[in-house]
Image (cartoon, rainbow, N blue to C red; front, side):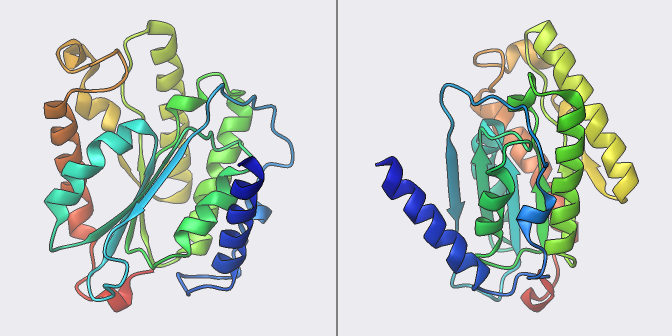
Length: 238
């Protein structure tokens, strides 16, 4: 099974490299990876990917990149954008320091052009070396800018968690996101501030993930942030 999965991923990667023009096809993900990562695999790694209405090239497309928090809010976000944007989402346990992170992202970016990209990575990086995380996050952002030069890229901070030590790591990583956003001239959607940790005890299901009402609120707010950046014509999407 593992061999079959690796073969499928390799085929997809080859197809992506020869695939559609989603921006600067010369931007190779491998060139933006860390030369060395001390990241240790989690006991279970996972990836989910969905792209709606891939045959529709008249409607702009928004790409949401994140973890299980993104996976929870994508449905209300896509519902709020229905008729205005088609939505793609890639959610994963992979840290940006994972050598597989950018090659996987390259596959999914190559399937269709995107007008807006919302990028988050953090909750699965609490034990990652902070210096490696900052370097890898910066490289991921620079790769997105090079690969999709006409896309509006919005960096999304990680949401609050209940455990104090874990939350301290989230705050630290969010500061890194803000720093890189300033360096790269990018907009930030501050999901941490929006969710308001002081109010989260009534929103958490398990100290990390949120209830349906909170996910709906977050998804609709992110859709509200995305909507002004969607082009009138799909031909402008990259």
